[in-house]
Image 1 (cartoon, rainbow, N blue to C red):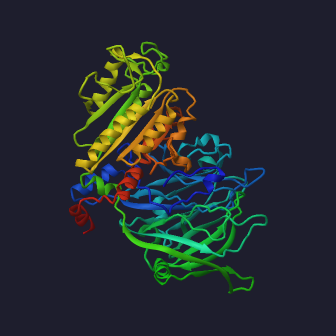
Image 2 (image 1 turned 120 degrees about the horizontal axis):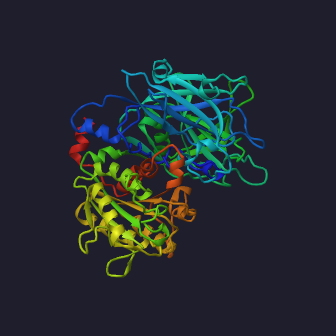
Image 3 (image 1 turned 90 degrees about the vertical axis):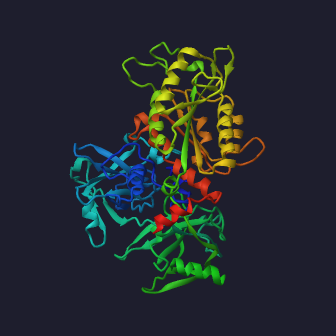
Length: 589
């Protein structure tokens, strides 16, 4: 998934029904039940079944405490694994639901169920402060949010239930019972079925009832699956279409993990969006995926209904739902590509501008501590490189510097970090670290801060690879201390690069104001636009300020790499590049 935000615009975005985000690449080998692509690949490549079963947790709450004055709380749930030493390790966060005391979160949290060990889970619910507009949930500082309650259980308690659902009362932190009713949390667990089958649909509605007085409704759809216990679990919602009674929504892509089977009934509800959180039901219907396919084939519509005041009856509305496009697809996972020979090729570019401070001074961002304590540049290189290096067979990484004055006296905005005039590759993460340390002695800090040259150089390498090897995908890490001075040139370079097998990770170090830099990261839903008006074909940038990660509860690598598998898949799918047939045949069997 993309990121969910705590502002009104964020509440209007689609969740769960676009191209599915794979699990993030884990940064460490862990035993707390968190999914790790590298570990899973280790087992699969040797013909061994993984030692755990993937479980998806759906979370909902009821009767939460209202902490807001002028509106209802904006709740978010955070799921932790409780380690043996009592420490909590975060497994995932839901999206923020605006103005609701009874949220049913769509974002699922994946945990690996291991029969042979006890796996304590802790759930925290927060009211996200409205001032944190445009902040992705993964970057929210939890200490700045209002705590609404805590619940604890053991994973086996959930999966052992016939309904695979468990309802828990919320308490104060550390399990202390509250004198006030803090509400309840319901957790539903489902085993993840490994399947590539999915359906892509384009749907629209016509002649919807208008629920607004002075304008037209702002409709969106919420789709839920009916589970064996008789309840329902929301699996996705569309984006909001403003001021329209005949809305057409962006394509929905639903995997078999989400809808279960083609004959499983789905509840499709159409709401009029209200920023207060009191969305008004326009109408609903119940259809399976097979029924929706039939609507497409017959080019017919299905009428929405509303519950009638007379018990047991429904009012049939004039508004109808149509399925304009319906196709079955094979959605290969990130792991399918990696295990069939696709590689992530790592590149790094380091900022040598004067604003970093003299490397010999203790307060310099480039100061190398004799005690071995890593500076921010070294930490970013190490944390990200140590993850990606396992996906690159030869571990030879292009490494550049920019904004520095080299030995010949000229200021360069893309020079080889190892000092060579020809070869720009170094061996392994250790090679990058050694070349960086040497460059600090041989390169004078200068400026200004320009990104365009290094992005264009990386793009040229990625572009050249297309003609002879379609199984390579490039990842450029840029580490910088300041705001760039060639913003438009950088946008132009990124828009051109969005057509290439390339992702760009940017880490901001130091105390600079990086708000302008966040324009490059299209997490706000707006794609970059070049000076000629061309729009980027996809989002290829992830920007993270190091200080935000330091104060949060996730690592630099987690924050940066969370979107990378999704960006990789978007590129491969847009070009219809598939894993090798031999691999696909062997894994499907």
